Length: 293
Ligand SMILES: Cc1cc2nc3c(=O)[nH]c(=O)nc-3n(C[C@H](O)[C@H](O)[C@H](O)COP(=O)(O)OP(=O)(O)OC[C@H]3O[C@@H](n4cnc5c(N)ncnc54)[C@H](O)[C@@H]3O)c2cc1C
Image (cartoon, rainbow, N blue to C red):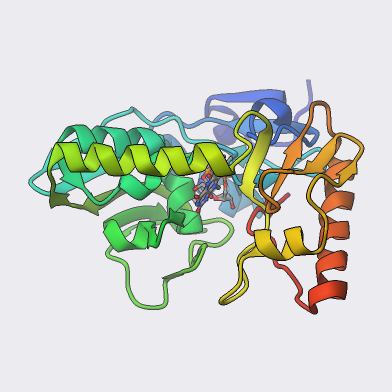
């Protein structure tokens, strides 16, 4: 059968026509036509280099917990499946980008290391957390980041420490076509009982404030400086508002949830409506925190 990609790309493990309902936490969107799943860093580099050589655009998918996919994606999508190896050296712990962020938080807590408690309820991969500079409760990834490894758009490997200007609120310089491969976090010795108490407190807070029984992508909009997007949405009277099966959660205004079988169009329309209403009432233009594909 004719296919559009070069042979060296097709030598990398891949699957075809995978629905985004299986690849994202929100569960909307069409089909991922080409999902490449490198199992080694060498395969990841081969993927990026082949795409660079052919001038092919591509995207990287982590745990799909910060994504709203609006349709089919025809360009190659890469999702790392690196060996799940976490290594501790003193106060530093390294993990591959495809490792679970919550799992890393749990593992370092079990080692008696403190610093990643904030991540105990943030789903997705370590690579996605690096890209998004994910955070909660006043802490974020860059606070514990010692070093990270990534492939440039040309496929060259870079390993470095974070520098000023490279990470800010839910943003990093790792824009499109930088593929994070792994990172090292630097933590501090902690009292296991206190670490676990903090983790439990954070989990408890999420359990009472977030609609975790519905499919969602976390907070949909960024908090404007000094404001809470959820409160602005609530004050606009939008909690519980629905477009089809897409709903502004009655529990948390900044969570837009999939009640079951929501379509990408319903989600896009609900997001547009929320933005328009908040602009009309508060004069504030909410910016998406989620990535939109
Ligand atoms: C219930 C719930 C609660 C949440 N709570 C929080 C929270 O408290 N704080 C918070 O910050 N976020 C939160 N989120 C959002 C989300 O979990 C984070 O943004 C997470 O870090 C995204 O990681 P991911 O692997 O799922 O990335 P994806 O959603 O797969 O991708 C997000 C972006 O990262 C890029 N990316 C993914 N992997 C890589 C890689 N290896 N290299 C380069 N780029 C990559 C993607 O291309 C995309 O642009 C929440 C989400 C849910 C569903």
